[in-house]
Length: 598
Image 1 (tube, rainbow, N blue to C red):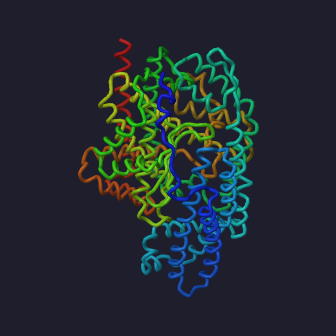
Image 2 (cartoon, helix red, strand yellow):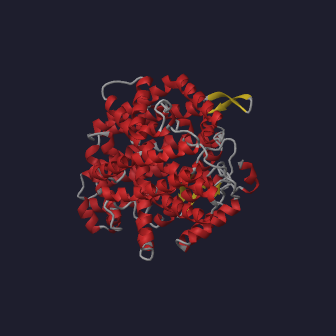
Image 3 (cartoon, rainbow, N blue to C red):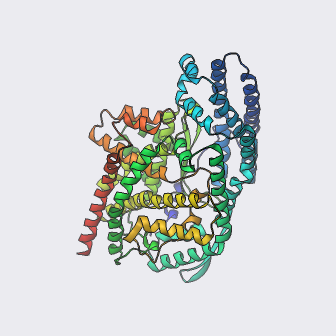
């Protein structure tokens, strides 16, 4: 058994001292106060600019001020978050984070005021006559459209003020409650009280009996806590429905598509191709069941290991493997990753108080910080590649003004999926039979989650929003809608009697005011695979266009950026082609299973 302790002595912590000595240092205090004062300054500037004789000039000045403040706040926010992320019990960091949230409420209120003001301007004149406005043309045109989806100024002001104690509080309740649930379970002959995260991690355990006991204990725990969690979900979805309706959106989905620079046609095309692929994913699930010695895969066996991972990837081996294989794509990518390792941008050691999972956050300009909870497995190496991809995206977009550096979720996964694919292909080419099987099955497992499970989440969320128009739903109704969505997507790929009726309680994405926090992941995976296929066909002409795409994700919609690669995301054929890559992997997996069972 490979354990994280094998590589603990060499796992790095990220270094935040290039920015400030500490959270309590005079330097950080000054930066925090300057950023907060900058909010007041922007409010005052906007009040003065509204009466400017030349609206185009006023807009140019406002954009410059917004960009400057965004740079200030971005650094302060990332610095605070870096401490909260690695130690949730850091009271100084938690207090500073809470204070920053309160201070930035005024910024959210100002955003609605600015949006309404831009809606009344002749922005095309400003774009034609002012260089800074021209650079922000896409953002300004989107803001013009968004101005038609605002409540009255007083209502927008109140909504921003109530957000922390309304949907924000429901989301916090879900986070706090689910992170503190303890579940009793017998492990290695001893009865233990384990956090829910540890119970769910047992889904990856090689012991089938333990996986089953953990699954049953998990469901029982969710059953005990279903009432307050259902209240949180009702509260958030009711809020989103009401605010979306008052702002004039046809639906929360319409608002989500607009915010993600996508459209209904591209979503419909992707979902059509996804539904066509469900029988293929069921082939994979049935083949995995056979490999595990069963004819039907049960929910608690979905993440079961299919072979023993013999190789332990030390941190140094992972670093060298990533740098070597990133270099086969481009020196720029490899050099970026080398800098991240060399300058201690990565916090890799799992430890008490540190958040789980992995993420990448921009700190300032081309500099990012990456959090991982590294263990010496290939899955951890792949996760590191994924997060370095996000960092590379930040590098490519760093030359843009801060307001143009944010990427919609539909495009934010492009570089990360691309980097994962580079590393996976390299690992498969250099691995033995068992490790190739582990890598292949791990890839299919992830793809199944991003296509099939995401589709089930999308269907579930649609059902909630529709039902929530008329009344609150009971926990039992949430569970019934969840299992119906699983039946429609997983079908006979899973045992119909062993599903997960409480996935609505598990997934934090449902408890966000960013509605439909699901389909963008499928978009990101399939768009990334489609781009990689273009790269394989014509690598020489790919590089510059690829970096330009990454640098432009805040300056154009997804369809326009895709067209630069000859991709029509409104065509079902594009999404089918991306899914064909996964189908070929399923064919390989079925072949390996047949050989091993012969």
